[in-house]
Structure formats: structure tokens, C-alpha cells
Image 1 (spheres, helix red, strand yellow):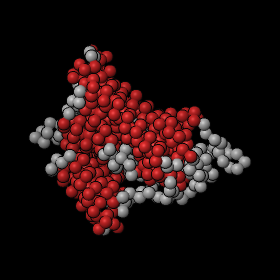
Image 2 (cartoon, helix red, strand yellow):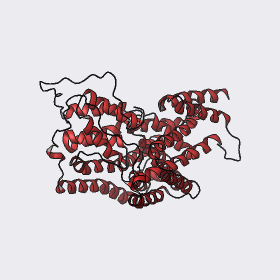
Image 3 (tube, rainbow, N blue to C red):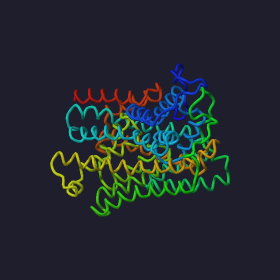
Image 4 (cartoon, helix red, strand yellow):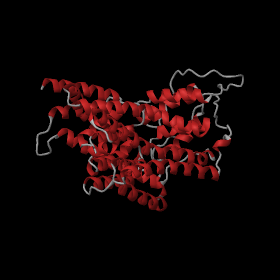
Length: 468
């Protein structure tokens, strides 16, 4: 898979056994459970890699779902805030095995990454001053700067298909870089511009890119192009109301409990509220919401430092699961470094620090991903009511354009803290600059994947650190 959504069939694909009619065998709930669990541990490569894995496994090899139905579901997930790969897994799980199938598929996409990130966050915060760990992260930081810059280029090359969209991207960059406007205000302004522009000049606000139409068949699938929508996936107002009510309760009950125990200003309460808002702003992928997370977690709440934020993004890039799981790192470090939280939980000592961090990471993950499940379980029946392609609306097209400018600002912010660690008044760090340049060449010129670039830069950083 070259770009997100550019699905490239493998040249040789083992297919599932078929019956006399050419259909693969029925898939039980527990067979699907085993696959979703495996996917949770192998879903590296960001949304592009994760979607490619699901396409290869579910469309080509196992033939659980046809190409057309797979892309139809993916197009819906692309217009939602939240991690599209995790939402796609939830959608397919729901379509196959009702609501519990969706909950299991989406949950197992996230849980392995949560446990891995809690462990890595503990190693980072507890042992980060050791020469080995410090050296590795010295090289990783410049790599992250190049990776974020590449993300701005990748999204921009797909989204900015009209001069007006370029203007929106430039305006959003100036708004956040010069005016320091909050990310939600930029999103709202872009949506308004898109709403008006879509009616005045609709051709200029058509979404660039997209996932296209199915162009290849891999044989009959369990959920094929013409397979009738199962009864549980048909739209009913009563079901929609029930899903929305359940989602509201799953948000309100833990929020009420946190508020009752520690008040509205309590650390866990504020984390839950902040990351609920973040979950609704992730149009365009995790990189789009990172500036908002930075503004709140670093600038407003002070849960972690700018350097720790860069390191957390690097850890998120090297673990399975959606990149937005970096919020678990933010929560863990915030909990570890919060005396107020440790006091509220009655925790002391090293074990108390770990438990405070793990509790914060879990709370943050819950409130970040809950909306994604609600979007799929509530909206899925509406999507299944038509199998026409879904296009991004004009407001969402404008938001995506604005996101490009915001991500570019994030890349400059990271570069500033990495290349001038003591500020512009100090000296440029030549070793960091050289590593960042090498990472950029590897990404842009030689198209190396993120994990390879981070690994190479980490070894380079360790060598520089040991030679000093």
C-alpha cells in the first residue's frame, strides 16, 4: 500500500477453502475473535499499513467481505473523526457478528497497544536518564520531526487539489503559528468556509483523493456485493435511540464517578473531558489532532513537557494500533508526574507512580475511543441502507485543507525544540540537524517506512551520545 487508501492487491494470495458454490465457510464469533486479537498485535504501519493488512486478510485471503463492501465501509470511516482503521475493524466486526462483534473487533484493535504503551511509557519515564535510553531518544527526536513533515506533505498532496484549498491551508498555518488560535476554532472556521464555499463554488470543494471504487474481485465473499443487509444491520429508529442512549451512559457514568470522587477539576476528570473533545476533532488522522493535544496537555495543563511529547509520538509510531494511542503515553506521563492525582488515589512510592500513570492512561484511552464505537454502531445501519460511494462534504474538505497547515506548524514546533534545544538564542545542534536531514531523505527520497527510519535514527543517536 503506497498511500492511505491506495489498496494494492498482493501478487500471490492464499485464499480460504470454498464450498460447492464457491463461498468460503461461515465464520464463528470465536474464529473472528482470534483474528481480531492477532490483528491487534500486528497492526503496524499507521492507517495505511493497517488498512492494507485488513484488505489482504479479509478481502483477498479469507474473503469475509467483498472489495466493494470493504471500500464502502472505509469511505464512511474516512469522513468520521477518529482513527479510520480502528473504525473499519469495528464496522466489519459489527456487520459480521452484531454489536458485540463490533465491540470486540474495535476493542482488540486498541487493547494490545494500550498495554504495550503503558509498559514502554514506564520504561521511558523511569529509566529515561540512563545513557542507553537517552542516546536512543536523542536520535529519535529528529526522526519524528521529519515524520511529521512527511505527514503534512502526504495529506496535502491528496487534499489540496484547488488553489482555494491551498489558501485555507495557508490561513490555518498563520492562524495557529502567528495568532496561536486554538485548534477547535480553526476547525470551526474551516467548516464554515467549506459550508458556504460548497454552495457558492461546489466544484472547488470536492474532496481530492479518496478510496475510489472497487475494481477487482477476489471471488465470492461471505458478505458479497449483492449480499442482503443482515437484519441486525438494518436501520431502525428504536435501535438508533438505544445505541445513542447506551453511548451517553457509557460516557456519563464514568465521568460522573470521576467528578463525584475528585471534583470537576480533578486530574482524571479533566483528562476525561479534554480527550473527549480531542476524540471529536481527529478529522484527517492522528497528526491533525496532535496540535490540539499539545496545546492542552503541554501548554494548558502541563501534564508533560514538549520534549516528552515528541518522545511519546516516537513510541506511538513504533507500536501496533492507531497512532492516536499516543494519548495513552500522555495520560501515563501526566499521571506519573501529578502529585495531585497520586494524593487523590492514595498512592505512594514507585508502585504508586506506576498505578497513577496506568490509571490515567486507561481513562484517557476510554474517553478517546468511546465516540468511535458510537459513530459506527449508530451510523452503520444508515450506511448499509445504500451502497453508493460516500464523498466528503464541502465542510470536511475545507477542514482537511486546514489540517495541512496545522500539521506543518507542528513540524516546525518539533524542529525548533529538537534543533535548538536551548532556544534560538543558543546554538544549532548539528548532529540533530544531520539526523533529521537523513531521516527526511530516507522518507521522501527512498520511501523507507517509519519504523525503519526510527530504528536507524535511534542507532545514530546512540552512537553520537556515546561518542560525546
